[in-house]
Length: 215
Image (tube, rainbow, N blue to C red):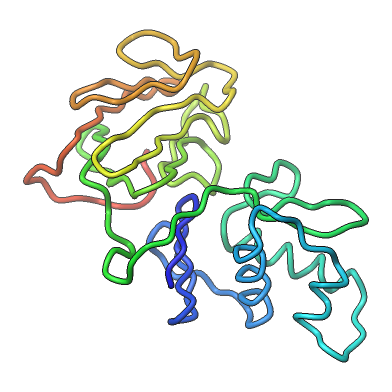
């Protein structure tokens, strides 16, 4: 089974985690912990239950579990101070709070039929959530002034895509107007994020697609 969330895909059969299409290292316990959180979503899992599943018949301190949570967050691009995916419930346990899509095997890592164009760069969008911002966890990284760490997101569902501002300080603009609620994207729409202007295209063109950080 393959589970997609944010810009990550967890392949439970291949025992592989990819983020932004790139394999990310996880220890066996880290993989098992992430798998456990995803299976229970959105329900929180108490610490005793996690200990029982990960370390049966072995005593480990809560600090071991905290280190495991930090490992998982680093691998999937989450932040303990501003968690989007792995939520800590103090004195209780952990929960996965992101949107998860289950994919058939042949669909894994397949880009959606839409992309962003920034200058000469072609930035493919993936099914599900695509984050835009300065942060390392952003699928579309825009390292420019006036851009928030997590500035906006584009959610792709099949051939449809919608743009949403994530409470950025300087706002997200669509067709020249500041967004105040999620809006559907149309082919040729201009998106303003800080000082960057990106063009949304609803279908792949003939140009070579380049992945990675947008600059």
